[in-house]
Structures are given as C-alpha cells and as structure tokens.
Image 1 (cartoon, rainbow, N blue to C red):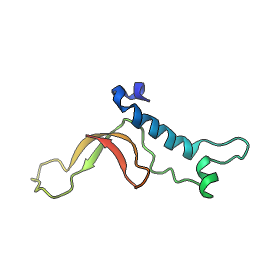
Image 2: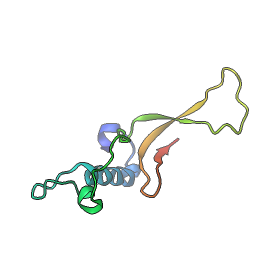
Image 3: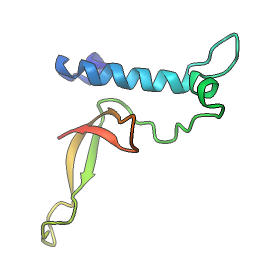
Image 4: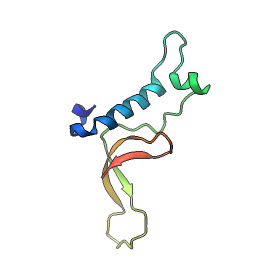
Length: 93
C-alpha cells in the first residue's frame, strides 16, 4: 500500500491498521462463509464509508475563522485510515 501511494515509510503503522480494518470487514472465512465482523457481531458490516488509502481528500474548515468570498472552504489532506472508536477518518494535512 505504501509503494502504490508513494507515501513515506513512517506511515507503515497507518497502512497496517487500515489493511486490518478492511480485511476484518470483507475477507470471507471459507468454512463458515462469513466475514470475521459478521461472526463477531452477528450482522453484516457496513462498508459504504471505505476510501482508498493514501488518496487526496479535503477537510472542511470549521467555520471559526471568517472566510472571504473567494477563500478556500477546505484544506487538502491525505487519507490514512479509520478511527476504531469513532466515526472519523484519519488524515494527514
């Protein structure tokens, strides 16, 4: 994943965490014909929020600062994965 996205090696931790998160939600166990998430939680996983690791993304500015008419409303960032304890994405700006 790091080679494909050309990210530095110090993002290896985020790459491993993202790979584990995705594999637990989509990898099918051949004997049970179920995903690990489905076995553990008893329901099918929601994968509609999946994004490509290392892709360019945009973070909306919080609105605390006054923006001019032609100012950018978002900052560019790199997608690094998912938080496990909240519904948020991990990014690097």
